[in-house]
Length: 389
Ligand code: GLV
Image (cartoon, rainbow, N blue to C red; front, top):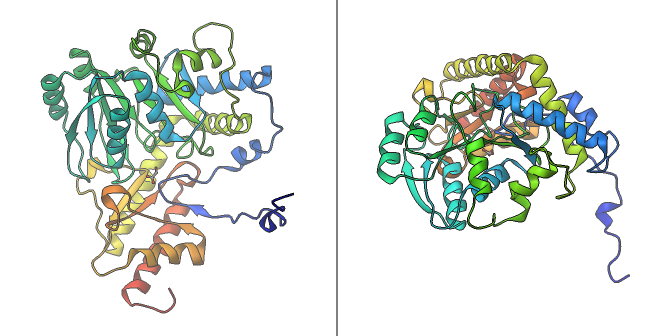
């Protein structure tokens, strides 16, 4: 052999148990973890395709939609963005992207790569958009598509969506919503709100591992995909073929790629747990935990990054880094002493905020109290430049 077996692979795998209170992934519940050790199935075995059918039902429930074209793509939540934009955009299409954090920026980059003429609608990080801003921009630019992020995990901002679908419909503009960090933490009604394409993360409130992403397209969006003048640029994301693998169009299933049955199990069980609890109860639990966290942070004396209360995303709380504090000392302290993940900022909030995530299985009072206690401890030590850090 030219290359010898690597030394590092001679010892068995060891993974520490951490409490993941960053912006995701969250800890998988035991039921999900157990499902991940079930035997691997073939991607066209009837037991596997039955699980895919169950998952479609679960996704329709969490998105509150009857959309035919509803499935999970084999990649992380970010791929949901890629898949939606890649299917709905043709070269030279004008698209409007709402940018108030990293996800709008990313959508902008992706849409440009698919040949779109991008118009940016911007508001400062930490704030959300008013409905009239959308209407002004849509009526002025007449885009084929509007992209909005319901939960900006980089800034901790929640974007209300009620009424937006009607505006989009009035101007024949498709409404695309990123709910990766928000779904299950705030209400979402794809059909009632007139959303044309939506995706979410499996690894946040749903509590499955990352790597498999729920996605759904309205009948109008589906029609647009089937009537494209040019083929979808990425075969892997092409919904006209992928939809047949997921039996969305009433045709016999056609092989598209080898889905990970293991990830299907995890997603199926995560969705089953949400369905069992009832999504309205899941949302309420997240809201209560977020309020408890915000009260606790206020008592500690730190300031939230999002000043308008109604714009705060319950699943991801952003906290301003106090002056003269090295935030990395606190996140490192939490990890070193408690195996607890607290994150720093991302995109426009790098070095400006801490991010604490409350998602899925982790959304409990005990976890909120735990993260508050450790955060306060770390902050005190950092203020006092303690050697215990
Ligand atoms: C990922 O979703 C993040 O916000 O870091």
